[in-house]
Amino acid sequence: MVFEPLPVVVKAAETAEGRARLYQDSRALRLAADTLRAGTLTRLARHFKLGADATPDAVVDALAYRLGRPVPEMQALLLSTHPETEGHLVQWAQRMEQIEQEAMGR
Image 1 (tube, rainbow, N blue to C red):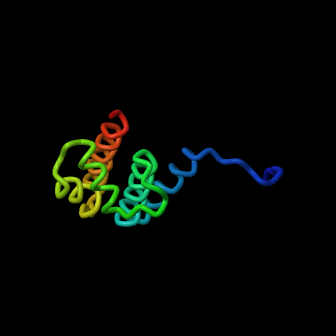
Image 2 (image 1 turned 45 degrees about the vertical axis):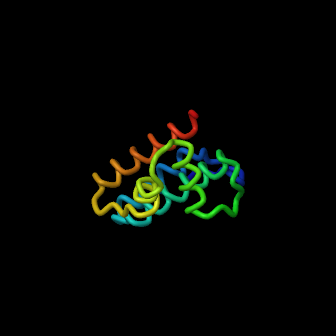
Image 3 (image 1 turned 135 degrees about the vertical axis):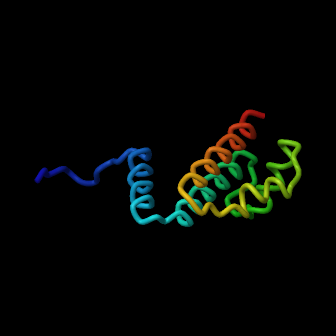
């Protein structure tokens, strides 16, 4: 046993990796997807300066406008997708990351 002074500071990446392992072990795909979705929507809302109370639909509208893409396409990606397998979850998360990077780069 090791004693450490409290509070202990844990890097965000370590926390995220630990949570990801817990989700994987419990096969909590829906929870993992919801967490990824919430993080993406929060970052996009902040980037578009929509405020903390912005609705997911408002974020999707701003994203579609910024990227010049149809709103239904962005809704399908960000709001309607519910991965059923780990592979699908990874692909979906990578697609969301691409869209987010594209939006932040403009």
